[in-house]
Length: 137
Image 1 (cartoon, helix red, strand yellow):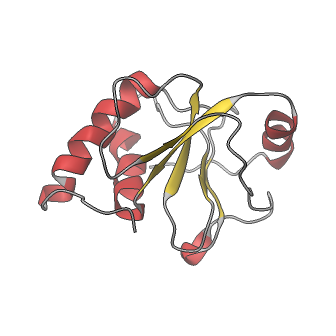
Image 2 (cartoon, one colour; image 1 turned 30 degrees about the vertical axis):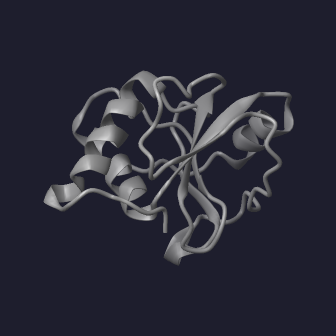
Image 3 (spheres, helix red, strand yellow; image 1 turned 135 degrees about the horizontal axis):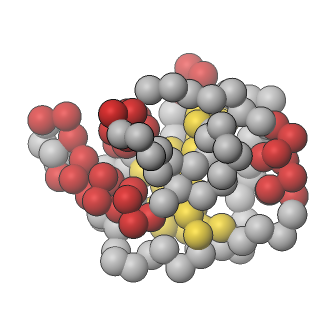
C-alpha cells in the first residue's frame, strides 16, 4: 500500500471550510485491515483517515447520510456536527498516537461508502481469517 504524505494545507482547508462530513469509527485492527485491502486495487476508495485518541479507533470521513445500510455493530457512526477534537495536522498517528493515518494524493477527504461498506463488513465478520471483531478497542 502506498501512503501519500498528508497535504496539511489541503486538509486544513477542507476541515476549516464548512465541509460537512460524517465519521465512521472502527476498531484499530479493523482499520488497519481496511487500509490494506484496497492496496491491491487500482481505485483506492479510502480518503482521509484519522485516529482521535491514543490506540483508539480509526476514523474514516464519509459523505453525510452514509449510515444506510447500517455499519457493523463494532463500528460507531458519528453524524456531521458531532463535536470532535481533531489532532493537530502535524501529528502522523505513528505508534498508536492520535493523528492522521492516511491521505489520498488527490486530496479527497471522503472515503467511498459504497466500496468501504462491504470491505468493513467482510473484515468485521472474519478479519484476516480470525473470528469476528466484537469490540471497539
